Length: 223
Image (cartoon, rainbow, N blue to C red; front, side, top):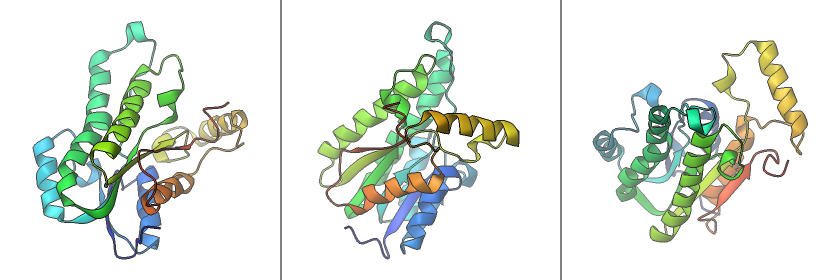
């Protein structure tokens, strides 16, 4: 396994939700973690600013991008394409910009781990934007794993995860939503952030894993 003690990792999206859990998990392994997000002032839509930001961080070993975006839903004929484009600009192009800016600073033996989502491979009416941008990310991971080798590139594909993204819901409605979702899943439970973080750790630690999409969705793709 790739030694993590005293490695340096950058987690974009690392101040909340899944990203915070990934950062916590890495720190327990002795990794120096730099947590970045919109909350810390990092803007994935600004390519030049990203380049300067990575220069300021200096050499590191592992890049993890968990940052997402609000994606408009609804049937395709009525879809707000400007809103869809804005979502793409953050999650898809933002991830791509971050990777391109980071490459010169990733040390030999390092890795890149991006974040897609189970809708990339599950056709669900009303989810065009999420499906398209996650599918684009998964295709990008496979291409970059080839082009950037021996640098390893992977993606984690979470399903519904119990994070603060649902904090705005009243407690009873949130509990009911999660319970109903769990009942539909073969695993019988909705993932916790630490469950998903374990997938990132696997992709980062295992030196033989590259060009891989790791599904952590409770079986949503087979339900």
